[in-house]
Image (cartoon, rainbow, N blue to C red; front, side, top):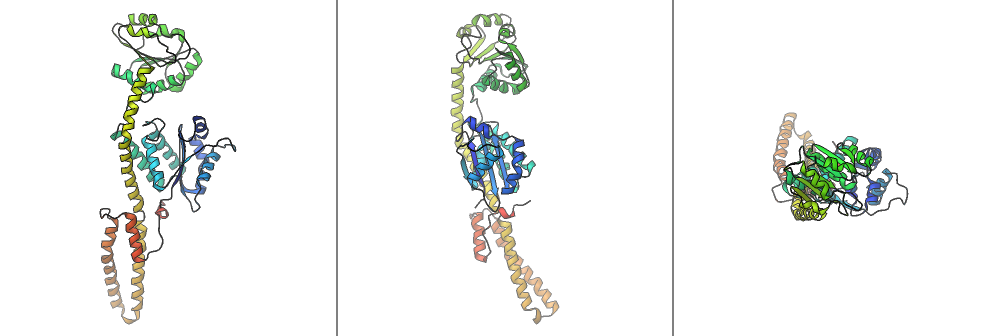
Length: 428
């Protein structure tokens, strides 16, 4: 039986406030690593905005799930009663498969999350650096990363925008072909604007204006994302003519972009189109803007239709992703089961060799030295020939018998000791 256990605090078991309290930075994982080494042979912490998970290959005294949860709390120095949340538990190969599901994005709050694969890789690299990841977790993580890459390459689980902010950027790409060198304006500097800015940055836009009632907040956003020029709201009219797209998401009543403002800006743009995306609640843009030639206005409703369609497509891909995960888990199980073959073959050879040597000693006084050497050579060769075919067959994965069953049969037939799990021979 595979000795691996996992505890997961995630978006299903805890609200965002609790998940923030339990989030681990790489430095906090470093501080907890000595404690983890004292209770486990191997360990891994995966921590993102939507989950904190602890995987343990226990030492001789396995930790209970409650003890693992307390380890997570201890690393965050949380006082008694400060955080009491439910958690999910996984054992054995189910824990391995859960890690695969996390890496593939199908266990994410946002189905098909494209960032989580990189986050699992960072967690693995941190574990390797700290020495908490050994042979077993190394193989599990490598297989998880492979599963995640295959899911994204072979299915559509990460295709299509499933957030309103990214749907806005995706729509802009469809209209302009690509956004490289284009000029964009964000009206607002809140969470939605921040998400849109982060989605725009990889598109290599040429210039970004960030307009907000509080200029300091716009400046802070520009610093946080590493690009953009902060401007006050009353500067929108001046800058609008330069823009190819506007994404507006400010609160408050009244239109931030009026028909008159947009019409004036379009006079100097000749035939260049302007995309205006209004994701403010209430609406930020006068609906009459839609009547201006070469202006494309989209609001929250139209973007939500895109998001819903894409989410439906991603859900339909879950079955295919599950097949990928099953495929990778089968490979992992084969690798794990093969860990028992080497020790079992070694035990068998040692037992047969001991019997051979004992029989040789019985006849030591009945034969001369030359005869004994000949018998020694003949029996050694005979043992090797007899063992060759069984040893080849036990390693053969195509004979229809699982590796575990082959090892069990061999141990039963030859009276070999113990029922190993593979864990004892994973050092190195």
